Image 1 (cartoon, chains in turn green, blue):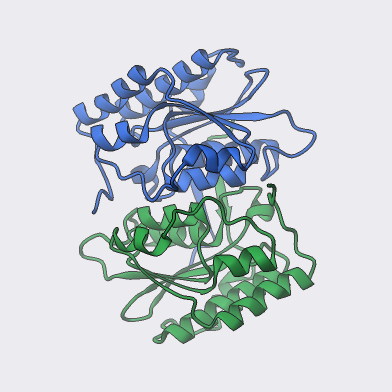
Image 2: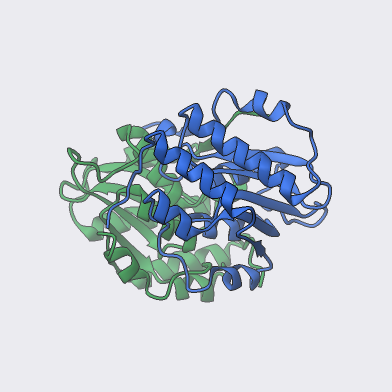
Length: 192
Length: 192
């Protein structure tokens, strides 16, 4: 039995990141970046229509990115949020992005978190989440199941010290989801 | 920026697995295995008090194991369930453990899934989950937050074709959680 496995970003990721400034100061710029990242993942056919990035909240410094890699990595937990959070934690050498001594960190995603990623955010030390498309957009447009979300996701997170903002630039988020469907992207595990 | 990260089981894992039969036919045997796995993770100080294993449901063939590796790997999503599911998927070369052509698979855990792992199970293709200690046991004994679980976790999973059984051998599950506290194990991200 193997004793380790890898989580890998697409080959195009480093050049994509290098083509942007190291800091993105506005929420709008951060979301444009994440939407472009997601679009690239769709067009390159390197994963599902989901992208995420971790920023230092105040400075806008980009810490890490993640894209959906479920099919390419053959790991169902390889969602964009889990990837971005894990890469940020490895980079900063801490499982807690909210640990004292660190600046606050923010997760920006093209679409609202699924049930798994909502839980993942809770353990990550992230202090805020910004999303574009809603869970309803995701389920209606793509057919992906968002899973058993708790009744009120925003209060579930705010009671744990995590602020959630969205939908923000929803129209642009919807466009990206529609692109995936138009390109014939695989909708996996959409069982009822 | 790095383009890949690793998820690694403890060094003792291969020898531990090799000391057991390749197939465990009863639920009780599977849970004893997972409880011993968790106990080993605590005693070796290689992670939190959580262990999991994926079996072929009918034959009892052991496919993979996972233990909590949050602190050792510096990844907050490195929970036992996510590890076991990811290793099983890599081994069988599919992100869907429920895909046609495969026998049914079962996840056995020492304690009820947290919010993240509940979602992770939904995407994994697992058909059944068996657990020992309850979420209340975990929160009461260790102080770990289980996160924003949906109202009725069992019906949330059964409506997605996943049967949940537990608590089963709860006393033994509680003993393992208590061992972690007694050994002074770290309780991380237990913020309110």
